[in-house]
Image (cartoon, rainbow, N blue to C red; front, side):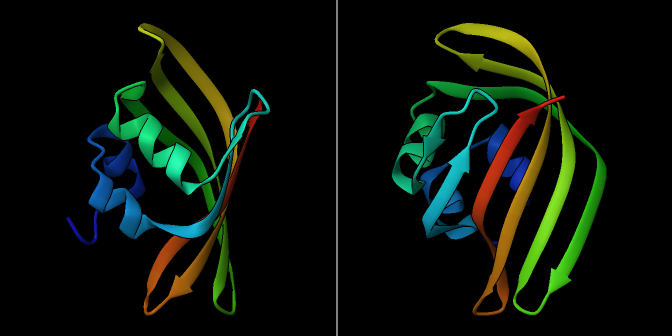
Length: 113
């Protein structure tokens, strides 16, 4: 599913789509303080251990600097982890890198708001 949006990739994750969206050196920080690399991030979503039944991204902003972009948004919705579903509302900052003409995620840090 080349060209899938990051939101769509979270709602219906598959390894090929996630691999195309993120760089090998990914640093994926959660609001809990946990940090995952690419393999752990992809595995958590494709295994079903983590899931997002619904998400809404609001208050979005993007600043492009050369081949990089800083994106910020508020992430609201539901998250399922360990078989339990709970509401989530966090702030997110992402760093995207233009790689061969497409944007790929390099870093993400979530924080409690």
